[in-house]
Length: 260
Length: 263
Ligand SMILES: Nc1ncnc2c1ncn2[C@@H]1O[C@H](COP(=O)(O)OP(=O)(O)OP(=O)(O)O)[C@@H](O)[C@H]1O
Ligand SMILES: [Mg+2]
Image (cartoon, rainbow over all chains, first blue to last red; front, side, top):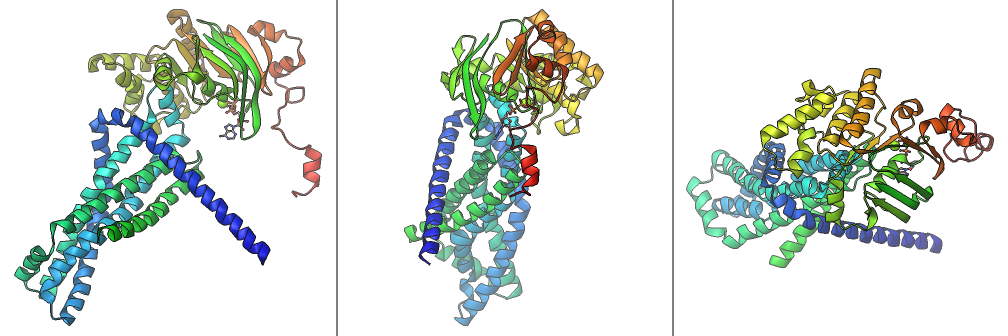
């Protein structure tokens, strides 16, 4: 018994050590990206191409998911508010839920699954096939050329995608609430304007920026540091989804607790 | 051009180089030969400053590579070209853009001139017609030749070729041999050719080093090496598996490993 718990303890310590080492590696990587930032800033076309890529990859899935999430909110919200005879509040309820919570969180998770994995796999494959080394030898910093534009592209994309998700989500809630359940059209929109404050919008924006940085950093880091084998790239891709999801949920709680 | 002194380097606890020293004279073709896995590619990675030696010095054009600041290292690399063993073409650019890549990054040539330079280089490797293809549409041998064109596009002072002959048909092989020779004779490029292709290398190299077990086991002109009476060199030049040069990766005795049933 004692022996086993000592074994467990040792494992926990080893895990902690791994975690700290990983954190150090991420910090080192981040410093490398900062140093390479000027290169990418001087070539905005590279960044825009990545925004475009991330957008093209994620737009359909973001819009589809947003619409369905909005419709679910419409159904559940209608059910809850009608028990209180407050159906008119559905618009406000749906908007707040989406703007403050579901929009940023679900968008970040979908981004990690769609664009994040693609980034990790792409960069990991470049590493495995010596493309990054080839750039190094050609005196071109792969950090500036490959990592930073993809990171910035993600940082710009996630808030934009979040805005799309929210808009489509509100349309979904509107469709179910007003068109199907018969909530008054005027009340739906006017109550939304009445109750949603600028601060709520900013909370969502702040979250989407933080999540965008997190998701992009994880995706680029995992790809850049992946092992140079097919298996290594696969594992890195999986880690991108897992690590981003957990971090986003933890950060979501921390930001919410801090702001409320 | 390159001076290596007392170089030591190990990967994952295994000593790759154990006090290696050699010279690559300016304007000559120098060959590094050695069995697979002796660290020839690793040596090129050390010379280009991608990894740092554990001990010893590597001077390229009088500058110690491992101690250079990043900008100085990049300035030095701008005068080097390297052909990677696995070509390492950028997969999301066309053949044309791959070759144009160093030009676009390091020069401000107008587009017309870039086009001229790139097409000329592609023509010398016989692939002008493939300019619009993507790397995924090339065969291995074609990819090597594109990578060769890319390595040469900035007219570097030092060209490092990692296995330039692997995967080439006899015609392409002859073309690459002549190209390496011409780079040297016409442009005065210093060349380092890594290969285990004894016969091909002997036709172009001015001087050869045979590396094995982390050390230089033989050095000389191709003719000298052919006539060497060192058993190590003789074995390598004639390609026998049995002899002083280990063909096998370090391992336990064969008999012992087979008999103990994988414990
Ligand atoms: N990332 C790595 N991890 C562990 N060992 C490695 C790694 N890279 C290379 N090695 C080892 O270093 C040694 C030298 O590798 P290197 O690629 O330099 O050989 P080489 O001489 O170029 O061989 P070849 O002629 O087959 O290309 C090999 O024995 C290999 O096992
Ligand atoms: Mg090699």
